Amino acid sequence: MKARHLVSLRDVSSEDILEILDVARHLKLEHRAGVRHAQLAGKTLAMVFQKPSLRTRVSFEAGMWQLGGHAIYLGPSDIKLGERETTEDIALNLSRFCDGIMARVFKHETVVELAKHATVPVINGLCDMDHPCQALADLLTVWEKKRRFDGLTLAFIGDGNNVAHSLIDGCAKVGMSFRIACPSGYEPNADVVAAARALGASVEITHDPHEAARGADALYTDVWVSMGQESDAKSKQNAFRGFTIDSKLVEVANKGAVILHCLPAHYGEEITYEASRSPGSAIFDQAENRMHAQKAVLALLMS
Ligand code: CP
Ligand code: NVA
View 1 (cartoon, rainbow, N blue to C red):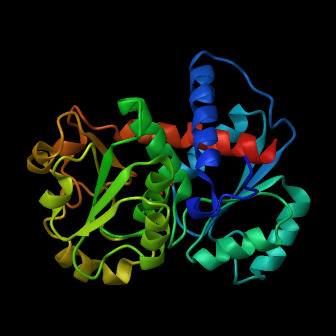
View 2 (view 1 turned 60 degrees about the horizontal axis):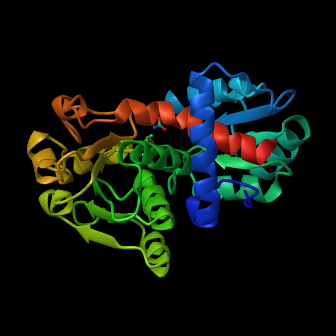
């Protein structure tokens, strides 16, 4: 892997992404077979969280342990990133103790700043702009279900948010077409869309969930109100009404379409409970694949 950090998939080449997915598949098989690894023995990952988490925290911590290493959880009130001391000083300090830094932050600039000053690899565990680890797990899940990327279309129903941005990046780099249906005013960032299109990728934006879902091979959604947007909850809940993956929308997609959600889910809003438990749903495979994809990233960046 050529990249030194994983800040956004826009900075990572197609070759690097395919290598991460390949290593992830091997690590998953080996994990299932009970193979023990010591690749990261003696190595420590600092995990900085400005926001809550279930999957990111547990999958990184379990993943580090499974590779023979160790992870330190630093919650929102532990180091008070940007409040108690500067992001630069935190990066410089953590680089003296640890072999890698994973950070879940509010602002994209914070993770960019950490990567700028850290002398160890920095991994973005979600920011307002991106969620690259999620998209790697999602690509791994799509590949497991379809055994290819070429010619597939992923339809994202919902907000043009961090998860959507990383999927746009990821789909563009593996050759999948991406469509989003979002309410007007909630389109993905224009620079992210332009970067994907500059690679020759197909990125379509519509305001009609049925139009996006028609003929799609994967249907994806995420919460309407992301962490940190709580003050906009009322207006977003109004704007997103109807942008829901339900059994009717699943019928519009291709037969055997994979249903995806990064979780946590708000059942009855962006997805119905029934759709989340329907035969095409792979939402818990996705959650599991966070760990395998991230183990690949950790092994490639920190070994
Ligand atoms: N999908 C995801 O990142 O979950 P957490 O917020 O629980 O980490
Ligand atoms: N878009 C959501 C993803 C949660 C994993 C958020 O940022 O809260």
